[in-house]
Length: 163
Picture 1 (cartoon, helix red, strand yellow):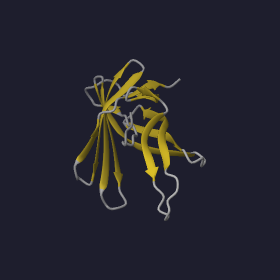
Picture 2: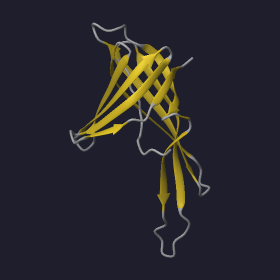
Picture 3: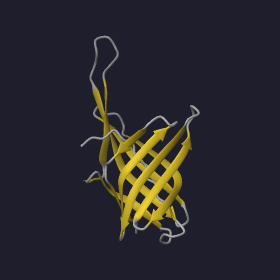
């Protein structure tokens, strides 16, 4: 299954009436029910030169993702990707990250990252998850840029406590 959604995860802290904050590291085990690496999307390029040339297809693969919860109200998330093309060019590795805050209500965790964008708009990324034992399951994500609508992703992300 292919997905054009870019994913970064976030997780956070407990409210005054809720359980103690979560402090741990979690590694992504499955993305939408599939093991890693997971193909996030395909890029197909057609040559712009007259007379054409070969079409090149590249897979953008998610190879790793980690959540680090600080036990207070903050988190850090990092992800690693690998772009593999069928034209024999070298593979390209990439990485990205985000930070934010989290709130725990019982077994539910809501994570939020707010990032100022270069165009003056603010980007908000919100994750909804449940925790059980050594697992953290993200079941819904929302992304909003500058107050212009919300993109919703329902891909299930299952994280397991890192050793």
